[in-house]
Amino acid sequence: MSVAKKDYKRITTKSLIEMKANGEKISMLTSYDFTMAKIVDTAGVDVILVGDSASNVMAGHETTLPITLDQMIYHASSVVRAITRALVVVDLPFGSYQSDPKEALRSSIRIMKESGGHAVKLEGGSEIKDSIKKILNAGIPVMGHLGLTPQSIYKFGTYSVRAKEETEAEKLLEDAKLLEKLGCFALVLEKIPAHLAEKVAQSISIPVIGIGAGGGVDGQVLVIHDMLGMNNEFSPRFLRRYMNLYEGMTTAIGQYVADVKSKDFPNEKEQY
Image (cartoon, rainbow, N blue to C red):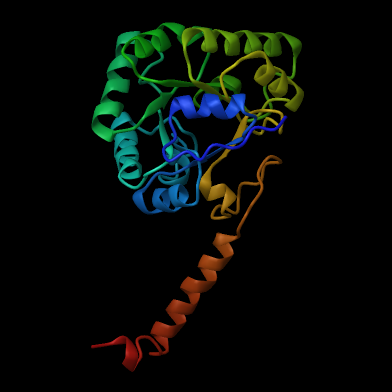
C-alpha cells in the first residue's frame, strides 16, 4: 500500500527517517554560497550539503584536503542565510576530527555556533567512532560517509570504485551498522557497487544517500557544479548533467565582450 507523501515545510533529521520509512526518496545537492543555495532550496531539494568539495570546485585544489575549518564555516554560513526549508549538513574538513575526539567536538561546535548549520558529516567508520560518540553526546547530529572517502585519497591512491572485494564489502556493511548504532541520522555511500549499497540500505533503518552507488538506496547526492554542467572536465559514469551551463555561460560572456567592444552595450535605454 502506498503512503501519501508528507509536505515538509522544514526538513529535519526526523523528516529524513520518516521519508525512508514511507519509501520517499531523498534529494541532496551541494551548495557553497548564498545565491546558489537560495536557488537550490527554492527548487525543493531536501538536504543541502556544504561539502569539502568546495576545495575543488570553488578554490581549484586537486583534492579536498587543503580546505580549512574557517573556510568551511564561511561557506556554510553563506548557505544557511539563504535557506528556508532544506536541512543543511556541513562537512568536517580533513584534520579537524580524525586524531582527537576532543578536537572533533571543538570543530563541530564551531560549525554549529558560527555557521548555523544543522548537522555535520564525517568520513569513516570504526576508526573514528570515538569522535562520532563525542559529537553526538553534545547533541550535534552526525551524518556518516563510507565507501570512497575523498579525504583518504592519498591512502587509496585512486578515485576508483571501493568495496568490490568481499573483505572490504563486509567491513563497509559492519561500519554502516556501527554508525547506525552510534546514533548517526543518515549515511552517504560513495562510489561502491550498487548491489552492496542496496544491501546496506536494507540492513539499516537510517537513510542511505548514494553518489555512484546505484538506485537501491534511499536518496541521491551530486555536486551542483557537476549536475549543472559548469565543470565540463568531470564525467564519471554516475553523473547525469541536467544542463550545460559551461557552454551557455561561455556563449553569454563572449557575447557581452563582443557587445562592449562594438559599443553596442550599453545602448540608450540602458543608461541614465
